[in-house]
Image (cartoon, rainbow, N blue to C red; front, side, top):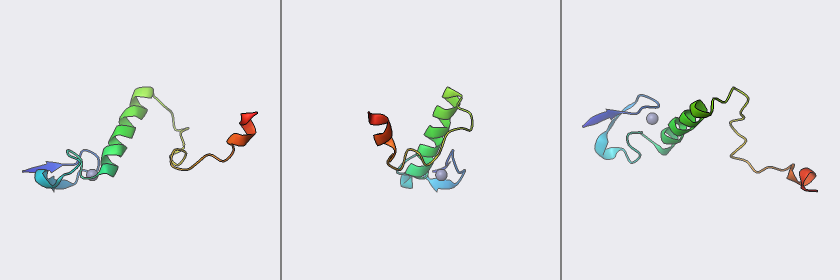
Length: 63
Ligand SMILES: [Zn+2]
């Protein structure tokens, strides 16, 4: 059985799709992120890399 990844539209075998209906964990997260963004109605202000790297300027706000 063949399905299409909702994110990248790539065709894949249902049995091989570990993250079905997505082709990969990445596509799953992308779709989830897009959904959340849509729900919140966030404009283009968000920074894609902000969540994946540690914040280094927190010490300034601590006190
Ligand atoms: Zn995909």
